[in-house]
Length: 72
Image: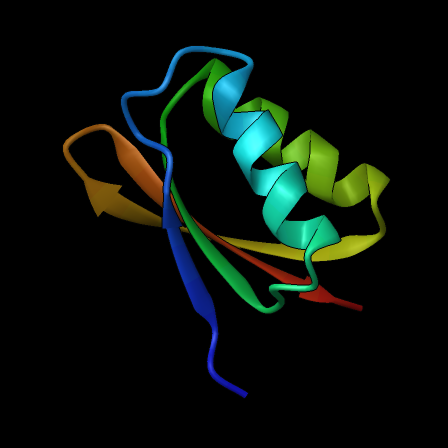
């Protein structure tokens, strides 16, 4: 299955979490999320873990990360 990409870099909190939650609830898994480092990254990871999803992380450069969210 192809994953969906969602770029939420540059969005102010809580919008990264809102956009990711909307995508998850729409069934767009696996989901590749490009997110800014710091609070946005931490908050998206926390949301995914609370929703029972597996989270893999890799640097995307320029202070951003790719988070791969998938069902366990």
